[in-house]
Image 1 (tube, rainbow, N blue to C red):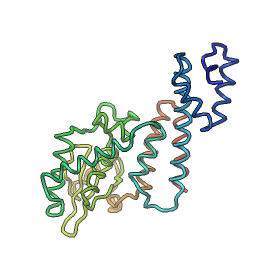
Image 2 (image 1 turned 90 degrees about the vertical axis):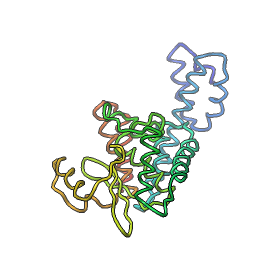
Image 3 (image 1 turned 180 degrees about the horizontal axis):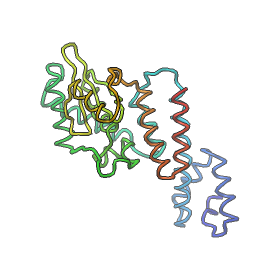
Image 4 (image 1 turned 120 degrees about the horizontal axis):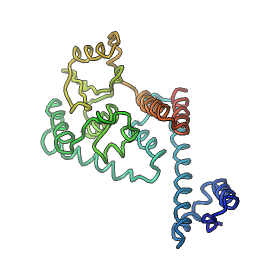
Length: 270
């Protein structure tokens, strides 16, 4: 049946495609065999259908993850599951190893247990000077800025995705760091027994005081409330990412992707 994927007649091709998709993951071995075909169209359509099926599987896995009752979901796991809904064949272990390497590099220059501020400065050196991560101010609303594999590939991201890179490195160093979902912006907060430091990875890891955060919020046109600087739960962080993507796809008229993100938001909110 797979060889019929090269049929030029739509009345042949479309029923074959529909049948293979209806078979679901059972069709995957046949499609994998199609990748070895001498016919370019069979190879092309086999890969397209494999990707479609794998995205559908990833979609179900992310929804199952979202359906868990707790606010304190495993954030890093959730981010990779969301990534797989668009990039089903990305190598997760490769990106986890990169995060491990960033943390090891920080460890070679300071002791995270001796001085938290010094460790934050070391993270800044590794991520923003060495690896050259930066905020994508030219194409702020590019969907790639919300998927962590593409952020790490390009060293470009939006506020929340750059915060995630920073946060996952900080957690590997056992730093008491959390996300802060301010109105209009996303930052991080390091909370220790002695002090609080706010960090803005989108702007090169700048350190902010409580008063500076309040001033920024007011500049965004909001009245300040202390609750705006409270930690965001993993579920709320995932909701913010999905909400951002939903708005982007709506604006770009990518209605299928918009509806997919709408579905995720419903499951995350329940």
